[in-house]
Image (cartoon, rainbow, N blue to C red; front, side):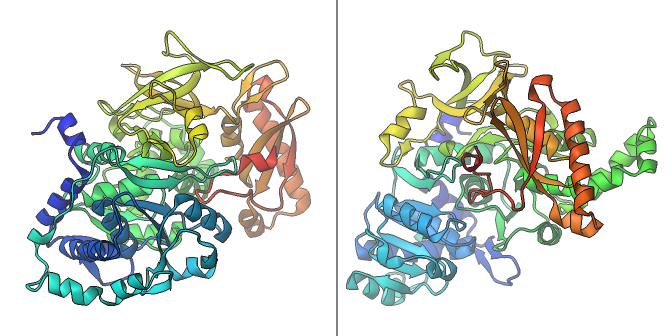
Length: 570
């Protein structure tokens, strides 16, 4: 058996070459709602066609290929074909608007763009400065070309492929070139809340750190089932709904549609995934709409207060939740944002098999994770043993200068990480790179928290350094903690806590669907929000009290990853 170090230093292309050969006849990719399933052999064949196309047009290792569209098996084959060729893939979130997508693609220096028809309708392809050709993901035909050789390469591809493999494509034909682990595999543009998108350069080593951990932890395994509904253009979904499954022989069903709660429940019951990767919003919506009304009933509150009876109620609720998620999964891994503490506490109390991980695009993405049976509530899991390290840096609030603490145990400060998964830097942005990556290789995450647990390697997050507020008496206040409490209150959909003139105010977006369904009048809503503010101020520290609620008529402006653009509301 290989050591962890040997696994980490295995060339990524060699890993996929072996996996695709070993699983040649097994199902690899299915588009949900379609009867067509692509085997690992067919995926290998499609990748070979793409490699032939790249070779014909003279694409070199390290050249950039942009990819923008909704999740589909074709999208996946382009991504995998590009990184196994040795070129650099630039996945662009489908939710970026046309102007932002144009800026990103031009900044990346991509020379080929694969895009779906929806993207192309909103993208000014004439303004793409370095792009030599735009190719449709649906038709695989050239939409725009500035080079006749590329159009000829596409039109002649099938003929050349047949000539190259006259006896048909077999498992022995799956052969990928060696790639250096420090070469750039992906440039993943962030969708941060500061208004500026940066291109995170992820190396083949960064991808392998995540893949090897997923394989060794048996998150996926040969014959397991995955339902991919997170954006594959984002590091979280990319790593654990695509890269790890395809390295193990997992059958991936690609949702390819907006993952509404109703559609997800239906798809999960049909696919019965072995592992569920999700963001907090999914669990929080289920808790708020399905569980809260149930446990708020007077009879249910009485039953839950009786010893032994409460366990029966918890078992019933847990059974319903497990069934809603397909009933065949080992655990639900929550990541991408903090999980609401009230939701987390309840799920832990009923022994629902979930865990919370921590990561960021700059680590491709994983930093910490703990299997659900060992998960410590309020934590973000243990730092990945042998792959990542973490420490706490105290930050001087006055001059913003970081200074390392002598003992990080139970000391609150900035979480800094170092290790195999840490990015190479931001593409064409050395200034931004220097702000987060120090000379010793520590990545300053911008998240405030502490380390704890039995070995001091479990991460506990309080909030973002950039969002931290200062109270009138100098206390540090993390608005995310107040917002988590407020968002669980009646008729609150989302909220933001801001500081103005030494006082804290809450910007509140009401749950308009619930208000309409329950026939709540404006006068009643005003009274409910007044009660919410009074109840909230009893739950927070005296220096965290909210002076006013400001009702918002529309939801907050979000990034494509659905994070609130806080800087717009300061």
